[in-house]
Image (cartoon, rainbow, N blue to C red):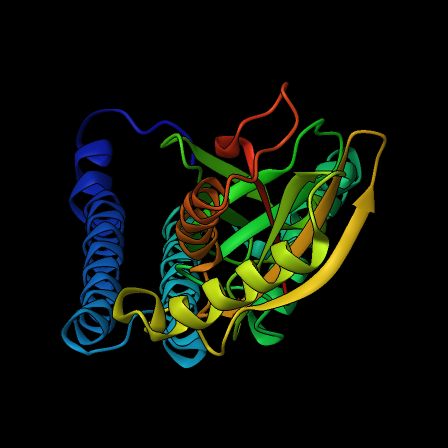
Length: 295
């Protein structure tokens, strides 16, 4: 639009200028309204979970929460795209004349655009395949990163996944840069506790102690609500010069393997101490190691 001085400028401001301003204002208001609706829906989903007796979110609840977030993001993007096209129309800029410059610009920014398309496609498959959702505990391997992103999923869109670590940090990962995503809280999980004992200890006695401890743990109300079945002793896992490891496993509710592992570790340390069984001098009973294998 050429510069229009004087009365013609005022006339343009009162017509096209006003329409542009109203379009932008309307787009902002609609986007905020859509965001409010999305927040209300996700909050209602969360409230239903909090008011229920479920200890963990169901897979359907997590998926609905993630879908609501994605739909909200797509609706807001659509509103801004339509508003931009309307502004071009009010400025009397034919869209057809922008094809050639857009082609040149697209070629110049092809690498960046490729990344964006890659992120969106990856996000689409994450949502449709239900790889993970809001509230899941995940371990994400990111291209070029030396460490995996580990934490609880707080937001999933078509472009990025936001994870909050145990230290309270929010990690934003572009979906297209995810090499591997390990879901530690899907359907069920397994707490694996490797108990180091001296090679002089009687393996049969230790196995019986751990078996009885598993039976008692399954009968205990605090642990019973977190366990899917009775913890079992798998046997000797590793053998070293001065110690060996006996493995104990327990199937748990999704995301509860860490809590169950800590509770079992404390009980194992106490049970071994009562029987006079100690680990090698450089380790004490507090160093019983638990590892997690999510299914």
